[in-house]
Amino acid sequence: MKKINLPNIYSVFLLGFASGLPFLLILSTLSIWLAEVGISKTMIGLLAWVSLPYALKFVWGAMIDNIKLPGLHNLLGRRRSWILLAQICLWLSLIALGSTDPVEKLHYTAIFAFIVGCCSAIQDIAIEAYRIEILPTNKLGVGASVSVFGYRLGMLCSGAGTIFLAAYFGNWHVAYNCIALCTLIGIVTTLYSQEPVITRPPVTIAAWRTIKDFVLRSDWQIIIPFILSYKIADTVLNVMSMPFLLEIGFNKLEIAYVAKTFGIGAMILGGIAGGVLLTKQSIRQNLLLCVILQFIASGLFIIQAHLGHDLGFLFISMGIENFTCGMCQVALIAYLSQLCTAYSTAMHYAILSSFASFVRVIFSVLAGWLADHFAWPQFYALVCVSCLPSILLLIVCVRHFILADTVNFVEPITTDDKRGIDYGY
Picture 1 (cartoon, rainbow, N blue to C red):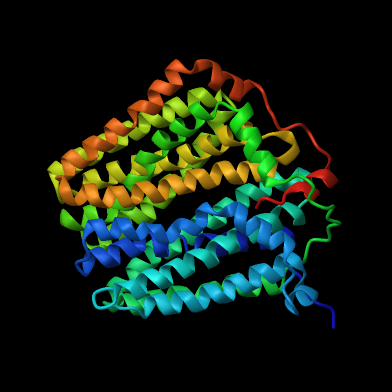
Picture 2 (cartoon, one colour):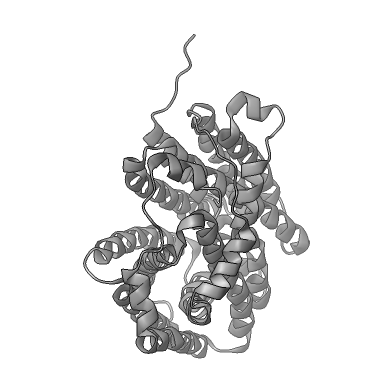
């Protein structure tokens, strides 16, 4: 009997959904659960460390590229075997996370959330590598768009979907177990997808050479402070928005409708707008626009803190914040991509993006402590101030950002070359 394979673009879409599913379950959705049962904002911020595995992309990428899974490798191939293993472990760890009691044994909640983060990060890297290798070069742009759309739908399911279920059943354990079943979509997709047929040349460029190149050749004195400042507002608004909304009187259903459903839609539109703007103006202009929008979004949260439970204004504040988040992500990806060197594009990008993820973890922890020691208007005023260094860098360090925009360090490569060097995912 002939095996039925999903068309590659459908596989990319469904695997994108599987990749986006677990992300919010250990971040904002988990923070709502913890805030509702009385966990302090400092502890909620501290638990953002469970997302640390996302900051270790280059580690997972090296592991996935160099280790063949016994049995599964011969059955499914290199990419699908790692994806399937990550998905099965993710399913089990989500069930375990949903079964914990954060009031009585918060450390178990933290442990299983961290395991979910590890499984999710490994799945992400394997799926990214699969997407790049299964599609021809002229379809990679379409594949990326389809994958991101699937990813956002996965976030919608784990965000709004989980909150709706928790409100309907009155039980977070049931909600998490129901969403855990959605991982079966990814498992079935993996089993019925094709494995990329790739001849992989040996990896000859070490990560240390990439790090050395970053330190000696790039404007790291500008890049690092810029990423720090650029990510603060985005990080803090995402991590602390759910405890903030619960504290000022919004219930789970209102948050699910506005912050998660409407918000994810605004984020998708922001990503589209960011992509269009990148074709019309420079990366520096886009980054500057994004930082200004971050400043405005933070200011709107100050107004929301004074207004309290105002559903109409919540649509405005969450709409602009999520739209800005979508634009910021696109602009940052474009900026980091332009900084990559030609001989090790994937590893270089993995290091830069991992650093950005690590920044998110650090400031998530700090955000929780600040939220416990400052009133919400003062807290969001500090977020506004955090935007100023990146604005200053964009204005003062014009030469760096113009070079990053006009000089593409990634030289054109052939289809076979591209498929052979993407080892940093």
